[in-house]
Length: 145
Image (cartoon, rainbow, N blue to C red; front, side, top):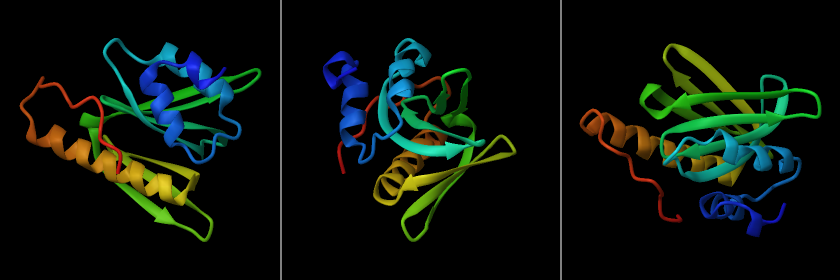
């Protein structure tokens, strides 16, 4: 699959990725998992729950997707349920920790620059969710940093 084969929003998110190694299956599957009207803004590679996959930020949620040969896994974190998000930088890579509805999820092996940008954008989104009236639509895309 080339970037020409992807939806425009996903293609833009893929273009922002620094590392796409090992993400092909997940990128192919991502359009099937997005809801009607949902747009993708950022995508990162990372490890969660013992598997390597992608972390996608949409206008409605964060979605982790791991698509293997035999098994697949997806887990989503609606923005309205995220209470906070952290980014921890290591020597080479970093990790993102999402706190949502009393649960904690850590995505490791995330690139440092892209990971920090991802977390900053999520913080903006959850801030706008908290300050908007119930049922109000969220902004679908964010400008490039």
